[in-house]
Image 1 (cartoon, one colour):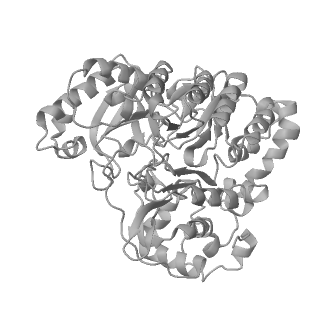
Image 2 (spheres, rainbow, N blue to C red):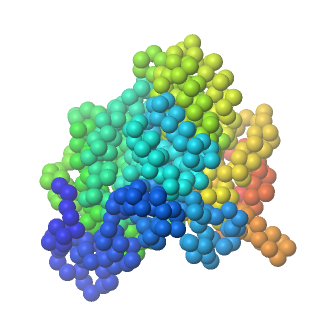
Image 3 (cartoon, rainbow, N blue to C red):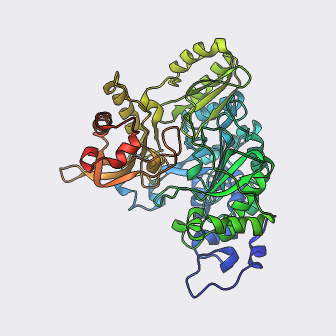
Length: 569
């Protein structure tokens, strides 16, 4: 079913009215309309691996072609990291080569979040050997390393691929990592195990040149768990387990979600996808994006913009008639979740053993911690674990008698199975420390806020988790619009003629969960901003005000949307 650009050109439809083309291959043809589209067609991102292995790793950073460095390297999970000492005020004024260091962030792709202790130990050893002991758990189930030299990349690939891991299409205009339920195949209350569907998608299509030139990134989420634990509403395509009254258990299909500077929640197509049809339907949605996605302006090139113009009915029709060649049955929506989707704590497996969800602070770990964790799990009878879309880990297959000893040992590593309210519900993006797009620092600010709030709110009964998401720029890698308290980094006047790091505040966002029936974006109030230094004061004040004002079991998000502006300051 794969198609080359030249094949797609032969299928060009009737001419568009006299308007500027959007760069849709099936309508406008495949002639590139911007510089990115030019180099992607001339020499795709996958091709750069050979040059990394045979030229750049041998001749060093200064030998790297500029287009390879700032474009094609991403197809292999590599971005240059930010040069230390450049403040956030210069992010928008300096050229990329002025911001970047001669080191890389490397994103290790972990589809479905599934890891063995052997794989974890390899990641940990790579970190301590080649990445200055750095490691972050991301909110897309990946592990990111920093301080990687191009000279070391081939050896890192060799070690990763020897244990079934890699960095192929971890970044770039490609199908990114497939989010999967962290408790796939093991939770006692799971509806269906999506592991086979995820494996089929990744085996068939990741690294396939036919899908390696999409208009922009393409994000996937698949879950068979009733907690809907993969943030499907903000992915380009999502499959959520549902029971059909006649057809049994399969998936509800969502398309067109995404955040960044133009947030849009995904929408149901109203179809039922049988388990053995997931990969074909996934390919159809991805190919629609390839063929019809807007390529002229990168700011408008995500699938959400196409869905906004088409609507779900037209999208479904094109999917069924042009890509699947068959109609999909109508399907019901999945029920509202009744349990948290972060899986923190101790939970029964279907086989009588237990899984334990643990959280570091805002995803920050290290190679040393990961290696020790691998050893620790094996000592307690486990050889499997999962990463989560919430910057957490889930340890699998723990015998009952080892649960409490393991929890104690995990605490000593900084991984808590019984975390405080804000340690559990706070995430943060990479921020100014390494990211060239960032305006403010995030990891340290968020960590400091968590530690301070743990002291200030100790002993206070807060009836629900209140999510705090901290982002260093407007791009929302930390999902600020879908947090109870979302913080978008910016520089604020310091009252002395200068600037200091701070945040614009979003309040009351969230995805479908046990606390809300459906996803919704946060509320922004003009002028509502907080400095990084005053972040603990602000959150403490807000939480106490919520507790004082809430009515009849009201959630924080509901209160934040109805409260007077003055109560939210």
